Image (cartoon, rainbow, N blue to C red):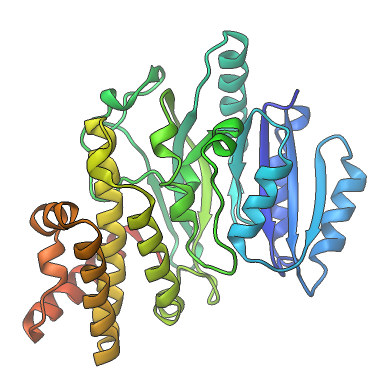
Length: 338
């Protein structure tokens, strides 16, 4: 039995994918590594097959037609044999010590018959171009080193969100909740970190810096210029999140509160990018996005509008737009997320 499946979506990743794969191999026979070649035109598939030949009991190489990051993750879920499931992007890597700690925890939980739905660990922004190394932890917000439920959650700071980088799901949960990420769409990692949450009951926060999130490639999806260019993709994901649930019907107060916070964060980032771009077309897209939420769920709209900077993000006068842009760049400088 494999404790953990690590899926590595790859698209033209020949320059850096080996670092990601080698970091996961530290897990040994407790893990399986599924390298999904998403229709690459370089040597990605050949490299994946070389690892499969060298580590046949650990690595599987799967080739598929190009469908985007979400399609590659779907393929990983469909083929996973591990009890738990983790996504590792091909330009990121895992910390060796932290991975061993995670596997030890999973082994203990399975042996004791404790059906954890989600394991949470820290992630680290790695931005070598400016020698930036920032750990994003959940101290204070989440009790650590014990099995918990949503009722145990405390207050999350603005910077604290459960992202794809920090989450390990039980594989069966992902299948049971019917998670299918859209194809040919960027930023679907937000759906991955959001849609399964109502199915999660038992969690464990392990305070280790497992995931190393590389920031700095010019073609990276979180690069500000790229995000602005692909803003329609971001808006699409925002709307899919709005459509996913009527959050007012989620009975668990702490879960509902967190999901509102996450959705609000997404709307705020999209709004700030649109205002920063500044064209009449972008400002209209900003207004249309907030109108979409208003028409879909007016109660939720009013909650975000009152408590989550929603009103600020909808400012139409020039001075208000300058406040939005200034705030966005300050937040970005502090946390270095692109």
